[in-house]
Image 1 (cartoon, rainbow, N blue to C red):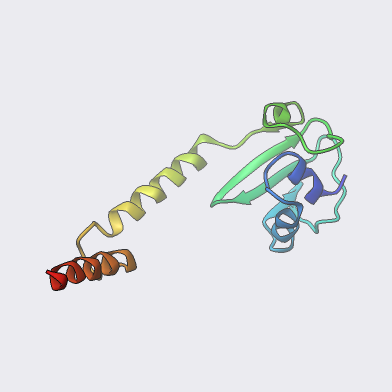
Image 2: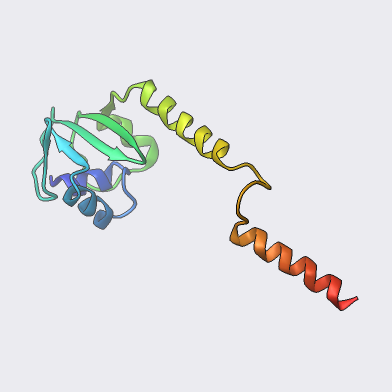
Length: 125
């Protein structure tokens, strides 16, 4: 089975085209090698999928015939991604929230619309 089709079947990507683009960008590795979308995958291969700033590490246990339901995915792969990767993502989210507090810095587009709506209401009175 092709690597892009496998990632689509295992629900790592919503469409097969998205999986193909990820392969072309070098975000998919099989046995520590960057691969093309047409690379064949076999049972026992180890994949590294970079998605949303997390490197998911997978081991292929079996090959599905077609796209699976979310509950059946664990029968076909073993996820060995470390918990530290997910903790790192949580830290990134916290850092973004801390970057700009509400009311500080330059107004956003939403803030500008709210201000314009408020001033229009005042002018109508």
